[in-house]
Length: 70
Image (cartoon, rainbow, N blue to C red):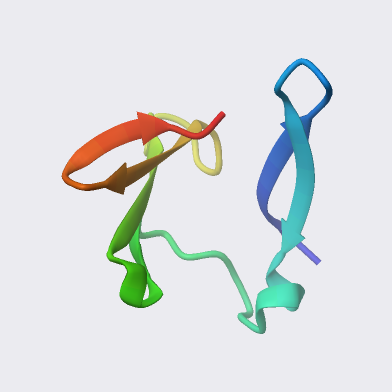
């Protein structure tokens, strides 16, 4: 089981959530830094990619603007 994404959370605004590739039904994480999320028109990217594989901050695009999730 390889981690696909990690989030951290606490009362101070950090979220911890480990999402594994086996939970997604895919054999390995995507190497594409941007993905479209369903019909909501949201886009996600890993900022800093490919500086270090599987490292960086997650950003989301909504209404044409990019923002950091955590």
